[in-house]
Length: 210
Ligand code: DC
Image (cartoon, helix red, strand yellow):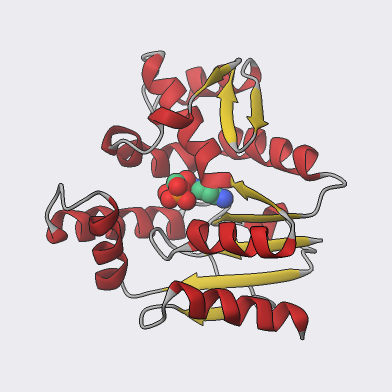
């Protein structure tokens, strides 16, 4: 079984996907974590995000592994370092590059082969799993998504800062030429703005059981 969950930053995709995965005995795959790990690897290697040629070259020579949910790049676990504001600031323009998306999509497809998975991201229902058994699009207002993010980072920034960063990322994710965030027709749309996590999980499970 393949379940695709797409939606903008901070819509609660990963928390919800993890719970659904546990309830249905599926493996949860966080595709954003892979983009983040690769972006962090570029930063560590002093490769600029706009240096397309070096990034293309790096993508051809990099290995990605997923072990117990952690992302390993060239054998090193990057998961502890991928949620920093430094990575968040560059990951969206980085992930807009064709070579990067090709690399990640190839990995995601080969890793998921013959597995029952739930994967979240931006282009899962449209590009990675166009034939997924179930597709969901989770949304929420920018205000609410910023509030959730703020709580997650324990109020270490202002609401306006977070709102600006989320809006910028939404814009980039929605307007790139490849793998743009979009609501595919066969995805079930859930506006989570005024819903609790349990309500969203129940709605997803209800649709699957139906
Ligand atoms: O899900 P996230 O916020 O951790 O994702 C980080 C970035 O990675 C997001 O801004 C865009 C990119 N991304 C993507 O382009 N395609 C995906 N399937 C998942 C993430």
